[in-house]
View 1 (cartoon, rainbow, N blue to C red):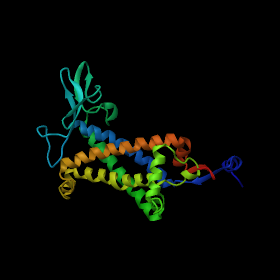
View 2: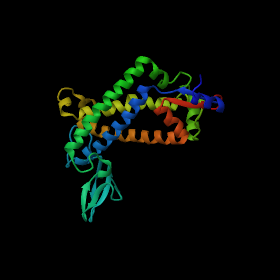
View 3: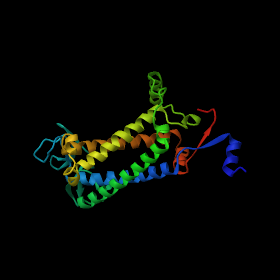
View 4: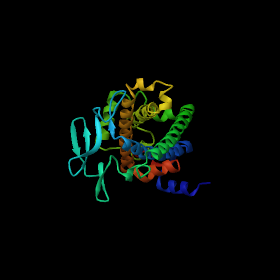
Amino acid sequence: MLGAEDMVAADSGVSWQQRHTLVTRGTHWLRLVAMLCLIGSGLQIFNAYPRLHWGHSGNSHDAAWLEIGAMGSPAKGMVRIGGLDIETTGVLGVRVQDGRPVLLAFPGEVTIPGERDLASGRRWHFFWAWVFVLNGLLYLGLGLASGSLQKKMFPTRAQLAPAHLWHEIKEHARFRFPRSEGALDYNVIQKLTYLVVLFGLLPMMVLTGLTMSPSVSATVPLADLFGGRQSARSLHFISMWLIIGFVIVHVGLVLFTGFWNLMRSMLTGTFAYRKGVW
């Protein structure tokens, strides 16, 4: 007997497909919460020393490739990249509180906790880091064991053909994306991007984070892998912003290519499409 959703689908010519399993959906939303908490607490930790260096050591007397602070009188916020000083609007580097400037790289509106508290920021960061890692291992382990991850994420030989790759690049550049039956499977650009994030950026975040842990670095020489503890901190910061950029593009494409349908598929698992409509 047809359910209400099936009868609507039959009348409108819409078909439904189970696109995401419960594990995929659950780990996706938990991963999002963990990432937001990690970013907020990570910015809190960065505020304690808002300079980045390359190599094994770095302090206020060493050259920094990136610094967020203040310059001039009265103090104005600035971001210094190499030898280039970029004046900010007062959001980064310095905030005016009670009529006087307070040096603060990132404002409390984006840090966890909101007030300046390095110890609490570290506790938040370490807790959610373990949640993030265990969540990722569950997703990857079950996905690889069932074969669903390989099927969804790994490009086929035909998709990797230069002509097909070039076609997909041109379609993306023109903001032409499949919205119905063609959207049931990930295209090659999506697959390659997800693989870079899953097996590149996310492991980089975890390993560089472990490198900065004194207890881990005392037993495992991870710092040598990245050219020094300060280099690991810089790579950790860069990876964070690349992941933030990925999330912004990801959310933008969801809004552009069918927000409610894609959101429903990530909440209930079902994706609506019309056969023969690309």
